[in-house]
Image 1 (tube, rainbow, N blue to C red):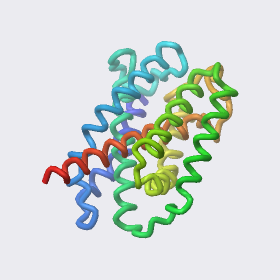
Image 2 (tube, rainbow, N blue to C red):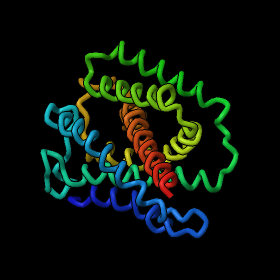
Image 3 (cartoon, rainbow, N blue to C red):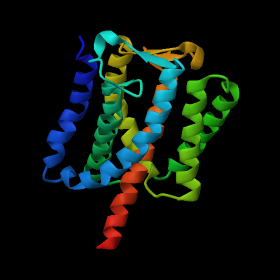
Image 4 (cartoon, rainbow, N blue to C red):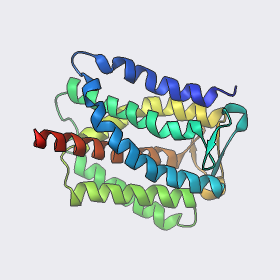
Length: 227
């Protein structure tokens, strides 16, 4: 029981690590572009995670964690911000390799507009709910920066990867919220769930993954321009 969260982390990253040596994708060669972004984005999300824990936005069930804490956060929660982005960047790279047509390119900008509008509406309506406020405020800021400031050309690819990543998302977050390992204070969110998963989790994950892919693409491009 005490190893539940640790095992969830382990199996989240197990197959992406093993399959990193696939001859076609050769994801292992891209590892060096992942870890700088994991460190930067990890510090940001762990800051919010720490505050959320301190102010009881969510809490952790001591029956399913090892009991090792850093800044009020279980070790397993810190690992979560490494294993999940790593696994999702793996999905992103596999799709880039095996799905050559950019199938969402023509609608990508409309998806971005829809997400920005949704975020703005929910921010206005649930400004007094901490988790909702931070989740949709952060997502709106990252999307706006990616679409209109950086004008990146891979948002369509990101949206495809995100949709595919929803399958493991529902498995991992479903386990975390149904056991439950992580317990949410519904006074600080919309109190609307998909199964046992808070609605905000879908977009908190989207913001975290997009930020990691932005760093991944930045460090990869910088390395290529230096060659």
